[in-house]
Length: 324
Image (cartoon, rainbow, N blue to C red; front, side, top):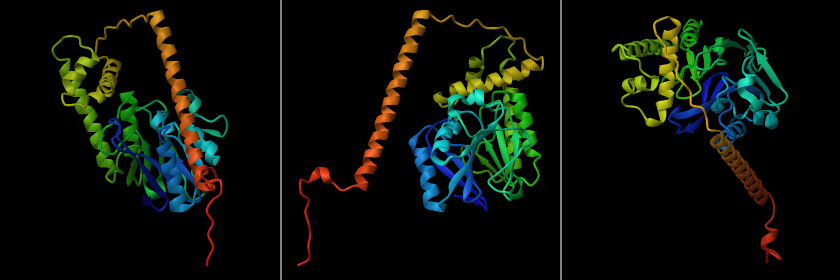
């Protein structure tokens, strides 16, 4: 989908309740394009991207940037390097978080304020915008007023927050960008009223903080899960852990401000035998998944082979045809 003169969106349908509608990979520039995010480690993301490139513009990927380390944005970085030879760009503090998703070579580490892009005329500013994650980064194409926000700002919903103080500061920084016209989020539709949308995000966080304070207003000590259940009364159960994480981000902010007394919990001591069994079971699961991926790849290659070659296995002598 064409968004501006130099920006296209490859929207991959998604049914994950954490990011409903679709996950988006953005293409910037022409010819040797610049991609923002790579999608999940799933064949449909790779096929959608390759299909779009082949069918729409005969382009290749020269550089691939990532907005943060979460797997739904970074899991295909190695594939992009292997398939296209793309240089991978990520924030300087991201490699320990990305781990083996990063290719062994061709990685460029970014700092806040760096300028990157596919050509001398299409350039983006790197903005470190922590809060959703410590390595969250946005890319700003100021000439066209386009901000690529990853999960810092989503289309159609709020996002999860790890550090609320950092997050609110990041939102204020984005709100002040000159010429801001569009926000291209990692999930959900493009946002064409960016300042009003960011203001709504900030207002939502302030309202949620007030609700957390009110939930603690009975003078008793409560767990974050108990507070979450009070605040999120009509929530998809699959989103409870995420909601609890958001509550804890508010509690950490209130603690830093000296507004809470915190009673430290006592973590469970894992049973050594149970932990050994769990590790063995996880190893077996991972090996099964690896073999399944191998079989799927063999089937894919076999299907391509059958399409490209004559059906010799079906005939001892194939039929022949001649005009009378």
